[in-house]
Image 1 (cartoon, rainbow, N blue to C red):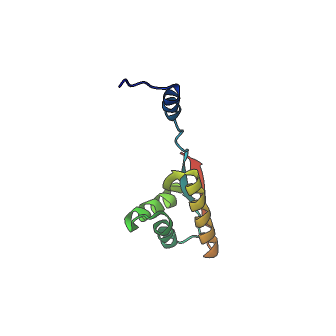
Image 2 (image 1 turned 90 degrees about the vertical axis):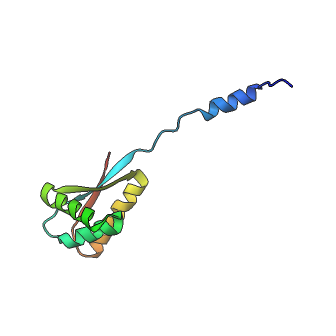
Image 3 (image 1 turned 120 degrees about the vertical axis):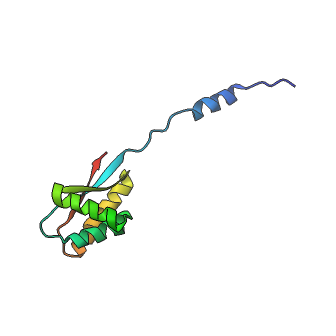
Length: 104
């Protein structure tokens, strides 16, 4: 029995070798303000970014000293969702804290 390949077999292999572009990733960034309590920021980072208390405190200190802090890097849809959740949560709790995303 001889092994022959039809043109359809070759076409299927060729089609499956097309490269899929990796999604763009975005940093979720919290911005410093003079009113939001540090404890609230730490709790927010733990809640929305699943960071440990130590990691959240380090990010909060970066926000406090450098004016911003990166909470995580995600595909665009996840980054936008987290940004919206954080901004809404801050507003609901009466804080002016702002969150944005930036292309990584």
